[in-house]
Image 1: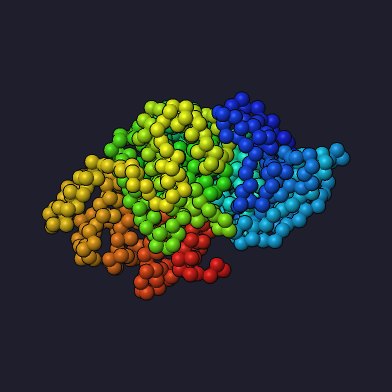
Image 2: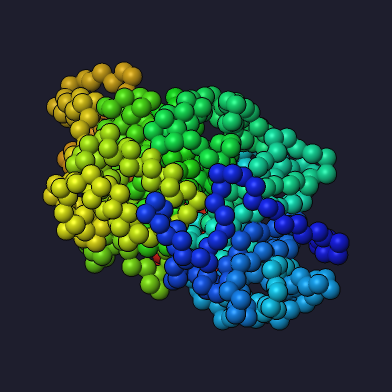
Length: 635
């Protein structure tokens, strides 16, 4: 194992020359009627003190070492500061700090630093002493072998079975476990990087990316648009690239590349549909990376390089609404970002709304209404569960996450209640006016982070008052600060689901049904709405007819296995175990483990499966399932 040779490393300052990018004057309150730019708010999930000193640009030089499961790196940070500031505070978690230096007229010199006490959620503050003229600080460090953002995969855990793999998941506050920085969505910075990896592997980041390997295994990256820390991303593996259009393409392991390319052939029209709605795509390229199955989410909207789960490779392009969702984040979330994780609905509610509009533009209203109807079913179930747990306040859009992990707020409330609120607004002001407002909102506030209160003030001034809209603040507040769903919520209606319900009734009466050309969404509606009286015998009949247990569609499998657990259809349990061991997507895992844990025999089965599966899961998934199964964290 050889660490980076630190001497001689160069640190260069990137000047933001892109005309459409904002300047980084983030210590100045320059709020205007047209945008929401203010001094970054104090974030309860970050130790940083942005009123005193804030990071502006990151130069990251790193070596990825698979033998030790560690990254050895230097993080060079250009800062913007109040002249009286004596230090800058960065967020870290389980990082080993080797030394910290600052630039002076005499060159790079050591400076005093201190890591504070560790908090189990937030990690440790890193306070770095500054001199009067300090503009750059340099942190030399390495990550822990168990860094929460990093998933190190053995060759056996990949599709190719020949090379190791590494990927990051920084959202919500895990970037601090692999880079010392100000880990708050309200703080944005540009970055450049140089990453050394084994020569037979390719490195990619949320930045400008190579499209093929080089002999040296050294890759350089640049991100000229300012992003928050949770959008920092890195992946390293045996990867190949296929172009999908003039500004889009897909990366994956060679074994699944052709399948991935066929699944995403409609990506370029999807980008065009998004631009037609809310303005130009501002990130130059939009590429996808299909990760190994242990990736804990459906997708992660890392700028220029969306990380995607292989569970969306259904073979019929029926699950590409997930891609529409991640693409929509290029406007809602990446372009205009929630300032804190208590404002998470500003990212996800807007993105679900935008996703639905993209799907409607491409496939028609009835198709998007199927998606909205399924989401509403899941939202109602989430609200019911949160109420039963005594977490009624977590059904508000504006959250209170004091002393809590921000992941606690990443529920269907932010996504689907947020979507329904925006759809409610559209229904009251009219689509034409609403689209005009949203387009201007994205344009005026690009590359900025906002709070819920700031958005509501902007909405009031630039839509309701400007156009004399008759909407009362108490009605809006009921959505934002009230529990559950207001009575006058939008009610998605799908004619195709009505047909599914008719077919379900026919089947329940013992009659054969015709399901030709059903989409995944119709099958999900069918499975999720099986009558309570359906027992394991009836499930066996369904399984014989439609082979749900061995479906190649992960969405259908997950919905089916949930029914099998609830009705004790044990012939599906072997396939269920294989699914839980090979798939790491938290959306699927959590409901299945919860359902198993509801009975004594199911809990024993879940614990046995989890013992085999846990090493395949990312920290994000493990941390959720550990709680469900009451597993010790050092298990």
